[in-house]
Length: 199
Ligand code: SF4
Image (cartoon, rainbow, N blue to C red; front, side, top):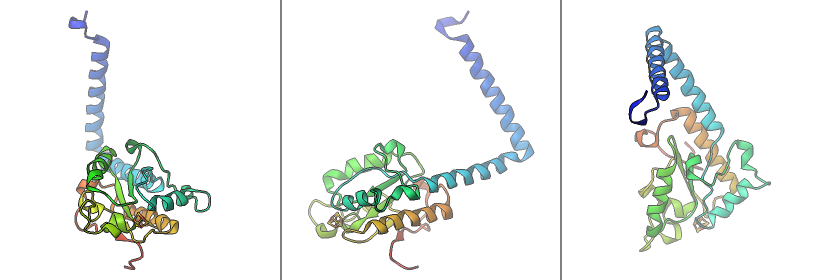
């Protein structure tokens, strides 16, 4: 009889799972299979992530209309595996498409922190890149990269939907190149990509 209302069946199930897990782990390590599985799983994860980018469905200002056009029937970003989702907890790309006022800085950082790793940030338009027409204004940040690390910059006021789709393509190439590295572990050597800047 279990004491203090403990569920003895649950307790022994947990012990069994731990024992089987430890034994399997030791066997995989001894046989060298663990590294192989790690590499294969990493490649599978990398392939899955780059083929299905889920940007947050967030519209800040006029660039958001170009985002909407990219998702609508004429450009149909879903053809490229770009699915807009409304919850940050289901997203891996934060698409910033307008100026970030100082009042909005905390909420957008909160949205970023609610997204699971590995995650990516795209700055779309001059406002998100540098503040745009509000550059050095009293209440607008000089670019979202002052609070969130940016992976792709898409210049323009506004950039066209083709440029946005190109930006997602370049992000896909970046994910192939560096793998599914968490945003806080990316080194300075992983330079952000600027769309239209031939390299
Ligand atoms: S970059 Fe231009 S189009 Fe985009 S949000 Fe700023 S003012 Fe609007």
